[in-house]
Length: 284
Image (cartoon, rainbow, N blue to C red; front, side, top):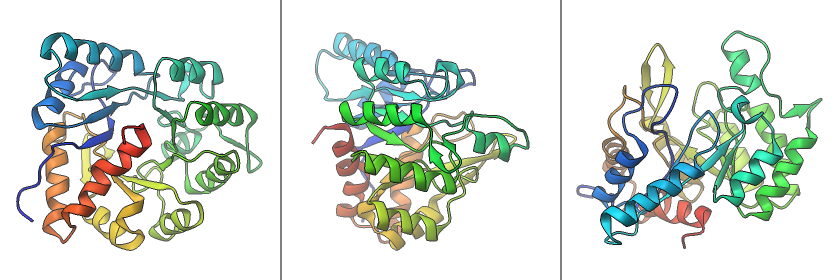
């Protein structure tokens, strides 16, 4: 395959400003980058609450400035960290009513991440191996609004019972959030098992933070898992927006080109960068 095209791509995991940490793009700058490369949509994520209100403003800005000359859409999300009260059904319902398309389980405030950082505390999604009651109410809301559940920064031993409960309650749009991230630490065997047992999507991202501003490329490992579990179960996202990494569109292009240069076909790339996320966002 020659040079890959970003036309029509959808990235469901990008960070932008305003944020507590520095980001490469503001929401408006990220929107302009998406329009520039012909992307169809981006979901903006914050570890500190909700972004559907920011996505709304970006889309209004797009209408005013570009006068309908593109079909790019920004989407928002809800992340269940301490800034919105953790596992807070009221915050989830509010976000979904305002247009949020993704609900992420705890990330930086997840008990798993706190433990991995050598501390105690954090938000627990399980009690004695069972999903806690507020999370069941959140699952009910996600199903009602046909939104996407992302597993956040939970550990594999938490992800399996959480996904099992979500599936039991009828959720169909479940994404295992960057299972390659060392904080999550899901083995290839477990990734293959969760796909086989629950028919979920693995979100595989461009790079991961190793601490101290250092990022590690995930590209070779992403290619390996695509070959192992099948491209039909993998979504290509960047988790981009850091000043330490290439700009969002450059990171995505590098990621896609790497896959294309290593035997992933145009049809397979289309599935992982367009078809799967379009289905999850209701853009089919």
